[in-house]
Length: 476
Image (tube, rainbow, N blue to C red; front, side):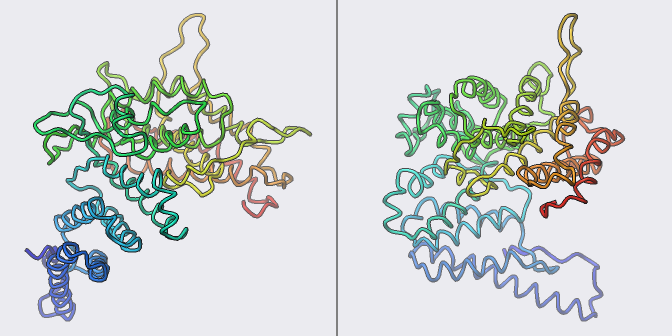
């Protein structure tokens, strides 16, 4: 099996020069794929780092070949991806750091070339590998590898975990108390493994929570690390987890309604108990819950209500209020002192976040949370109750509050970059979601669609960028 996709039939006449070129490309692609399939496993077997690096480059060349008749098939990409991750997690410590980074680069590239694969990974080896180099093993690793190597290694490892997260599966053999799961994981070490002949009872999401939740003590230095690890490992692709017939035996799904509800219930107790909250908490919360709102859009619970709707209804006003506090806007002659806290360094565990973290990251995640909750319709208020403001109403109030900071005379620029990021990210996310719904690329019911004829968002958004165009601050 060559593993190369056939050229589209009838695209070029057989006698044309283009057809001859396509034939040459297809022949070379076949040879390149066969070469990688033959010699890359042998190089891994003998731990020949030079040959591993050489054939990883050949693999990249084959994957990036886009010409008709030369594209690598999805089955071959999946086999390569499985091999690379298996070799990285099983014998990565035997390889030099630059070889490990090259393997992760190739694996991330393979993930990016296809929308989905028929794969299933246990999340715990990824966690053990991360802990070996960047958690418990960080002091030991720094003495061996350079700071630049450690930084690159962590960046690509976090990116790889994010790409593989949708394929995580559970593997615990029986329900475990949070304390038992944490002690079985050795604190920051490896989690327990399946016993032979046992059947799983926990999903990957439930296992992640059982491992890290015991360390979410608001008075403990481990709080931020635990929260960052939950944000990194918690799988949120609930539709894919429910639809996939996993090829692994004795394993549970990645995400389900139970793990979502468990994480939702943790939000209020832990945030209410924080005495001195720092902006990193908001970045992690917004990144996690906005991702959950996006991936669980239209997923209903046993009562027929959208899974994330009760949580968003209860806490969305708090998210808006917190975002406004984080901006530290000057009101009159007074400057806000509410959020003058130092950032911690655990944002390196959150993919897509600046290092060190910035308020622009909060703005991006908050914009995504807004866009994927615009469709939420609340029940009418009962007699004597205060009506709950919808997401659109809260967004309108927020933008009217911030409009003076888009005025050309406002040149301090303190919150200008954050506001610009918020406006652009929200508009991009809105256009992306609306476009996918119009093209029929979504699987949820039409009752969760955005109203394409509703101009409320446009009417609220347009005045601020028009003002910003004449502002003196260069960032506009």
